[in-house]
Image (cartoon, rainbow, N blue to C red; front, top):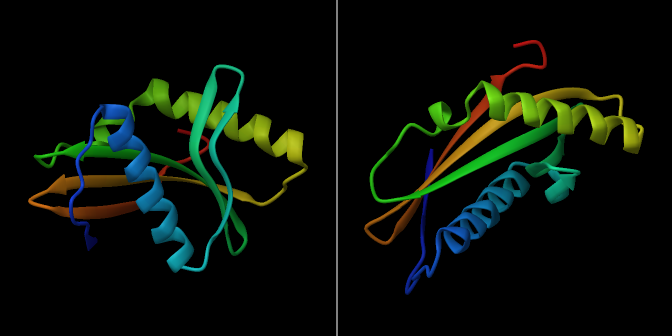
Length: 129
C-alpha cells in the first residue's frame, strides 16, 4: 500500500478521476519494474485498463478509483467483469502471440484528504474462476 501526495487536484467528472487513477497505477507498476504494454485496451466491447509484463507473467489489471471512503474495490470486480477481462485477455494473447502465464490483478485507488492511496491485489482472480 502506498500514498502519493498530489496538490491542487480537482476532478470534473468520474471519467477524469478514473483516468488519473489509471495513470497512478501505471506509474506504480513501472516503479516495480513492469513493462506497460497497453492502456485502456479495447477488443470489441471489452476493455482492459492496463496490460503489462511482469517478468514471466502477462498481467491484466482492472483499476478502481474512488474519491472519499474506502469502498471494497475487489467486490466491484464481480464475476461478470472478471469474465469480460478473461475474454479480453484470451483475445489479446491470440492476437499478439503471447504465451506467458496470465495474471489478473485489481488496483484500488482512493483520493482522500489530498492524498492518493493505492492498494494492489495481485492474482485477484484466475483464468479458471
